[in-house]
Image 1: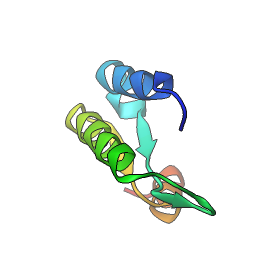
Image 2 (image 1 turned 90 degrees about the vertical axis):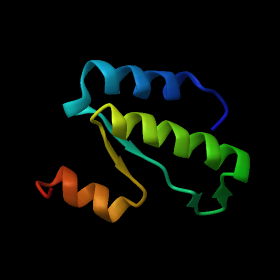
Image 3 (image 1 turned 180 degrees about the vertical axis):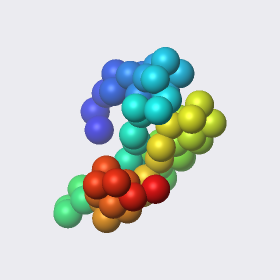
Image 4 (image 1 turned 90 degrees about the horizontal axis):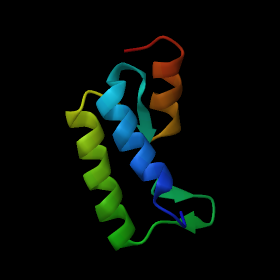
Length: 71
C-alpha cells in the first residue's frame, strides 16, 4: 500500500452503496506485510466500512464464500 486513494474510495462507496461495498485486509500476503501503524489505520477503515453497512473480511476464504453466495 503506497497511497490512500483506494481507502478514500472504499469509505465513499460504503457511504453511497453499502450493500455493494466489500473490503478485505490481509495483514500478510506472501512476503508483504503491513506494519503496526498501517494495520491500525486499516482497522479504523474497516470499522468505518462496517459501521456504514459494508462487508469487511480478513481472509480470502471467507471473502470467497461470501462472494459465492454465502452469508
